[in-house]
Amino acid sequence: MLHTGSGGAEVRQRTDGLACTLCVSTGTRDVDAALIAARHRLPVAQGEDDSALTAGAGAPAG
Image 1: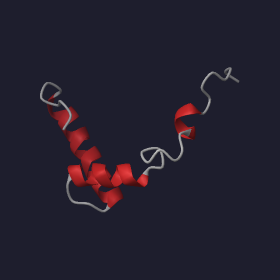
Image 2: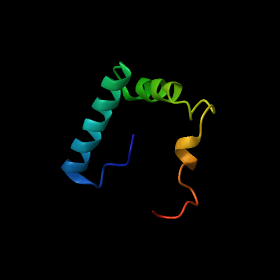
Image 3: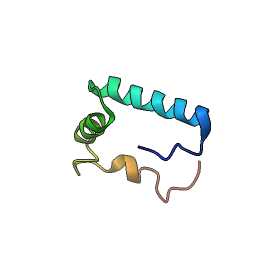
Image 4: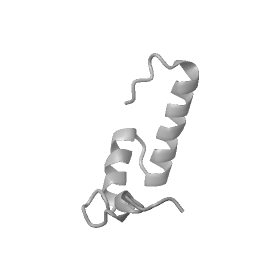
């Protein structure tokens, strides 16, 4: 998990909330399983679509 030891209670609470959200959104019960499920659901993780990573790269600000 993230290095939350020096961040205090607020960082730990935010990290726990993020972990809970990830688990709920992937239908899993632990962070490791949630990360695996999320990776398989993202087209970028499967090498199918990298448009989110390259969109706007090098484009002038509007």
